[in-house]
Length: 260
Image (cartoon, rainbow, N blue to C red; front, side, top):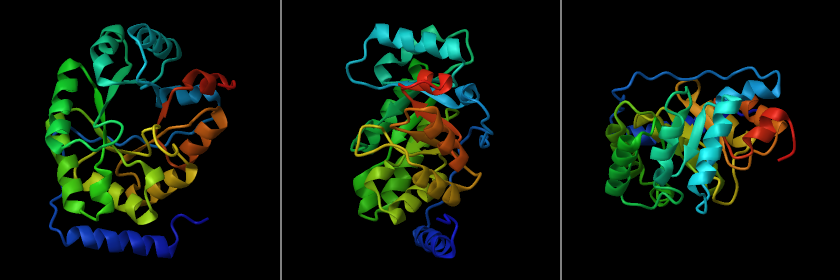
């Protein structure tokens, strides 16, 4: 399938025009935006610097988080992605390393009010989060309420200041037009990444979703594929499709090319 075919490009332009008609001002965050480029993967360990070693299970314990951080240090993963309650512990464990601490906001449903997402963003940054992955208001997006979606993302981006924000669009619940709109709105609101999924819904990342997101955002935003990535081949294919980050719980199996 040609993901940059004429019909798809026309649809992207149509949705862009719809957003333009709302007079939603483009917002550039105060941080210096640096979009990561797609990396060439030749062997499993090449993926390590793209992987956010993830543990978002509700039953995770402090001991689990310490182990997660030890594994991130051992395999030189890009960072760890943990729930807000463990940000401070993860920052403590990774304090003298290059590993980032990533956390989530409005997770996993995205159904919080904007003020809650904003305050949560401020709090997790105070606790030591280096990056924030927020879930959009899926209901507003499906209602075609682009203004609400854009303004909420922008509010979180403004609250984050110098901290990069990734926007989780939960692609498995969206039609093509909605995926395109979500990516365009994330860009306009000043996010640095778009992210496929929470990993807590109908499905996780697919090559097709990443390819579509790449057509929409090009090299202007990073793309994080997350959810259901269990082996090296799947991870490799997602990077080939355009992913610049991977959110994985099976990270060790992926970089050692073993079965999770």
